Image (cartoon, rainbow, N blue to C red; front, side):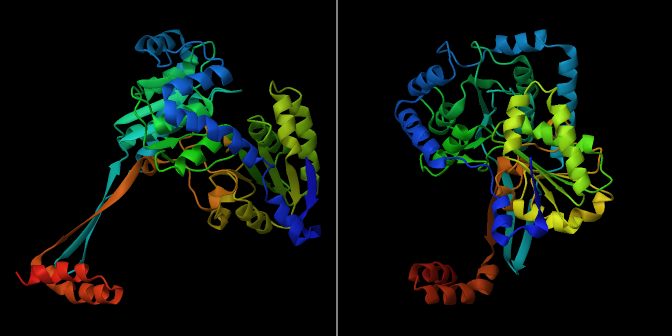
Length: 428
């Protein structure tokens, strides 16, 4: 990890630190666009072609059968089932509190306006399955979809040897999923967005993925015939703010837990102590040697850095500009600084709140905005699977009360039919 001293940086250098690892977006889009166009035209046939080419799919039968769900539950180790159940319970408890409330207000006498929420009827969930299969992501997406009341929930994830990982299938079963397809990558996004005669398209697509999946989600989201998406997202990231009393072993483990996600991940340490930064880097090298995914983590560390600042407030100000997916406040009295955090996907307070707890089982959602999108997006929630509708009901007296206002504004905008819709009722 490179080390920078904030007070010695120019404004341009400070701005440069906010950038994520470089991705050749145009190259990725050039690869993905033809795949999506092909699937848009030929549906499942085209999606299967690319699944065989990129994922090594060995069969045209991509829908998971009830027997496969049962086999996964029967053969999965009880310890793993227990862990998934605990995570399921915690995530459900937290997300249940997110159910939005409807309301009604009388804006003026005889004019009643209300707002109600409805579940998105038809959604698609993408669960990555490349270098790491993520049953936790299945829970993070499936649980709020279920709680929101979505009528149809489709899951796509790549298969290995034509089989889906048992923990992933068991997590899907816990979420009540019965429509699960063995397909991954941009071809899965295309299939969900455009559909086929046997697999209807979905209205909204959720879930993280690699650069190709992210590009596919963005492309289908701007196509009127495609689907909307949860959020644009890039590679995973964490920013840790630490003071001089922090345990460097804890910090190193948090940085490495994020670095092992992928070579294009980024981890950042911001500290008031140069000594702590150096000790943490030493500890990273020690812990790195024991990791099975150390080569992946090592590449991510090449994209990462440590930053020496003069105060915790300066650290938080930098973090708010960076807008990390995960923010860890491993400092004394972190609760005192909560109100200062403006831009972050999910925040972890204190030395015993590792990011991995939130990734798996604390209850919060781990499907979060990356690449600086935490400035404008929140993580996946029940509301993500719902949309609001407004209603209004006017009595004749209410229409009379509001008529002068509406007629005047209709005149201002030159929309005579709008004015007439009021006058014709009152003349009755």
